[in-house]
Image (cartoon, rainbow, N blue to C red; front, top):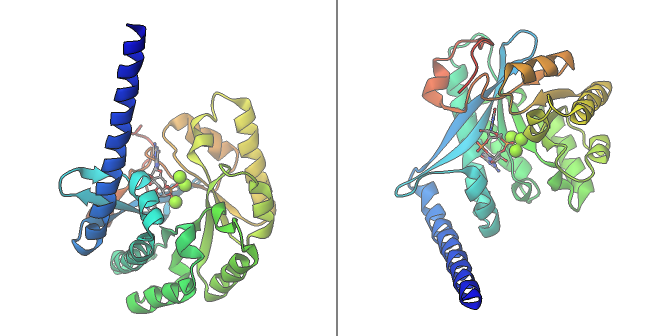
Length: 284
Ligand code: C2E
Ligand code: MG
Ligand code: MG
Ligand code: MG
């Protein structure tokens, strides 16, 4: 009976592996159509000033509305797009769309807001990326100062000198660059030394445990202090509670982003948002 049990288990595992594989194959196939058939949409999540609560910028986050499966998370399909190379046209679409929509958003505001766009390492390191950025700005009329690119330290996996050169070129153009998911990689500190970026985004995994682990709190304080000494600005990702908000303000974190203030939202909702986000209600 024991043996049989194991066979059944094995069989079950094989089936579920096959199913998972099939699903990813289908999804990969569907992703090709997503771009052409208008199934992608950008949502926007505000970043707020930790002192004033004013919205200082918004991050564009891509959403896929699959005709059968419904909403598919970018955590699932961005890696697929990277495997298939589809990240190149997809990333180009995201960049242009974000520039276009923020221009629309800014049209009737006195204080224009910058938009932050996530850039996959593959997209960033590909020849012609700088031109792609210039083209998106030229076609949409967005001033370079209102564009911020979010990259992760994986852009430095190899050929780092070219990446640094590219970052310098972007800086000269006036485009801002932020280091996303900071603290999750392997040699974060040396990357901070080498990368000419103006902003670091502390990964949500730190924020999650900041209140119940004094070592994490120490790391966060250390990163903030260090970044400030390097004239960099720090954003905390994934603020969900008042306690986290208080801790990060105490540690002098500059900007905050998270469900506590606002979830990512479609452009229409963003258009009707007040300038200051209330710090009173706890998000569900
Ligand atoms: P990210 O760039 O680090 O984006 C932050 C993620 O955290 C977003 O997930 C956002 O919805 C989520 N988040 C924000 N505040 C909170 C919070 O308080 N609590 C929790 N639990 N989550 C929060 P999302 O939109 O699912 O995106 C996941 C990742 O997918 C992004 O992480 C980014 O790496 C990637 N991604 C999203 N859009 C794009 C894109 O257009 N291009 C590329 N290359 N990657 C993208
Ligand atoms: Mg990001
Ligand atoms: Mg992040
Ligand atoms: Mg992340």
